[in-house]
Length: 296
Image (cartoon, rainbow, N blue to C red; front, side):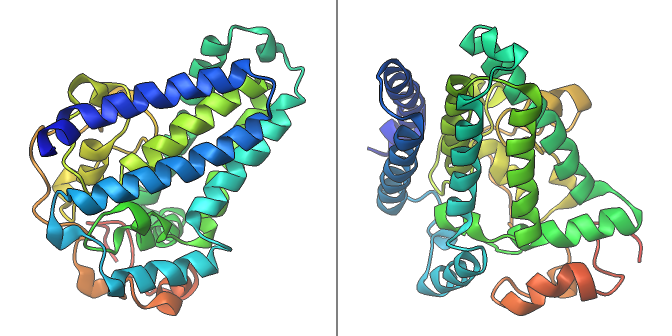
């Protein structure tokens, strides 16, 4: 079973996801309702697989980490998954009523334009959050570092984040959709794929995706992004590594996991279980709180 999961589970899941999404588009049902079923179904499936065949048992969810995740979920208004779901839901609703110029293009072309445009802005926002110097970079890092404090990566820890960071994600999603004027079907496909990759990228299961790592950001690439070592810094894309490849921040090490997850010099930060302290970081953090290797 482990070999099947490692080599075939993800590509088959991707094919099945796209197939069902296309069938949903050809039906006369609501794309928003179909998106809701996708969100629920893939979460349950991936959770079961992660429980059955974890990549690293010491990275698996514990009761202590679950309670921490639950606290972040409550703060984020029902959880990070709900916020991302809401962003996708509203984006689909906006696009369904769009008559913009791009909505007349073939759906696949709309999807490519939407994905690359969104990822361009997301890539730079994410990279600046990690690498920028000065007050802006320091502030953005403090709104993002919460997601990197945990020393284990698994599905549900995806919710560990700061509300400011999640609000940025929602604004980017809806803003790019509104600005481009793409159609509802393209936005539906975009958010279905984005939702899948967002979960798969935090999957504590051994996945060897091969060439797909050059097309979509999944388990192997994002796990490296969560490395505690500054030498592994990179992989800022969340859907596709296209801009990482363009700007030289692509890191792909087949069959090699980071030695440790988390942040460099964790003693400079509160632990991920200290909810109030981590939420206060953007506003009251000392000057030593900044991106790795940043001078005070």
